Length: 355
Ligand code: IPM
Ligand code: MG
Image 1 (tube, helix red, strand yellow):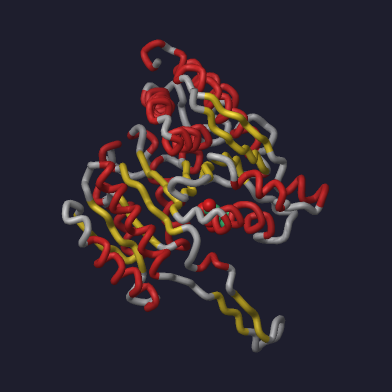
Image 2 (cartoon, rainbow, N blue to C red):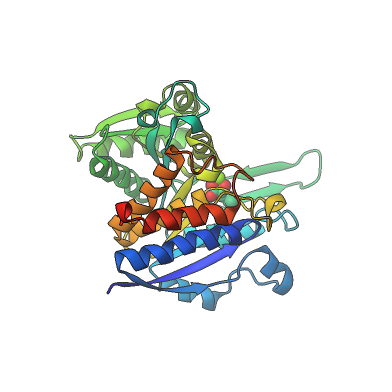
C-alpha cells in the first residue's frame, strides 16, 4: 500500500479546530481508498512562540523537507508583531521549499452561495495560479530617516525570468489538463509596474508552446472588475504574488466566502503545502463555530497532489453534494458546529454511493 509522510501544523486560532476535521476526513478517505500515511504534528504558531520564543526551528524544518506534504490550519495572532509568525512559518516554507505555485481554485458549488446576481456554478469555475516566491514578498525593503518627517520607505518587487517562466508554464499545463475553456489569462499591471514587462514577454514566449490554449490578458484592476461582472470569462489566471494574494480574497467571496476557499502551495514533485486561505480568526477560536469546509477542501487538494485522485474527487464531490442539498447550510461562522460538518463529510464518504 502506498504510504505518505504528512506534516500537520494546526497553528493558531481556529486552525486546530478546522485541522481536526480535515484530518478526520483524511483518515476515513485513507481507509476507504486504500492508502496509508504517517502523520507528524508540529506545534508551531503563536502560542508556541509566546511560550518558547521558537518560530520554526531548523531540525523540524529539515524533517518537514523530507516529507510528501504539509497540512497547515492557520497562522496569525494579534499579540505578535505584524508579520513575524507569517514570515517565520508560512513564508519560510513558501521560499525555502521553493513552493512556487500558489494554486487557488475559485469554484461555485451552489448558486445560493454566490453574492453575484444570476451566476451559476458553471459561471464561476476558475483557478488562480499565484506566483509564490517572488514579487513584493521577497522581503527586500528599507527605511531611511525612520520616524522623521522626511522618512522614506521602499520595498522592491522582484521578478526573475526563470521564476516567471515556470509559473506561467504551470498555468498553461493546467489549462490543458483542465480541458475546460482552455484559456490562460495573464493578470498584471505592466502599464504601471514597468518591471512586469518581463511577465508580458515571458507569457508571449511560453504561449507559443501551447497553440491549443487561448491567451488573454487583463490588468489587475480590470481583472477585479471582470471577476465580479463576468466571472465566466476566466479559466486559469496567472499573476504575480501580491496581485494573486488580493484577487483570491475577492475570488473567495465570489465562490461563497473565506470558509470555502482552499489552496495548495506547490513545488511539483516535491514536498508541498496545503491550507485553507482563511486566517486564524482569533475571536472565533475554541468555540466550535468555524466552518471546516475550506480546510476539508485543502485535504482534497492535498490528496490530488499526492496522486490519490479518486479520494480527492470523492471528498470534493461530498462537499458539493452536501452544499447543493442544503445539508451544509452555509460556510460562515456558527452555521453549524465545526465538528458537525466534519461528521457530515465523514458519513457522506462512507455512504456506498460515494465509495
Ligand atoms: C495568504 C495570506 C498570506 C499572504 C499572509 C498570511 C502572509 O494572506 O496566504 O493569502 O499574504 O500570502
Ligand atoms: Mg491572502
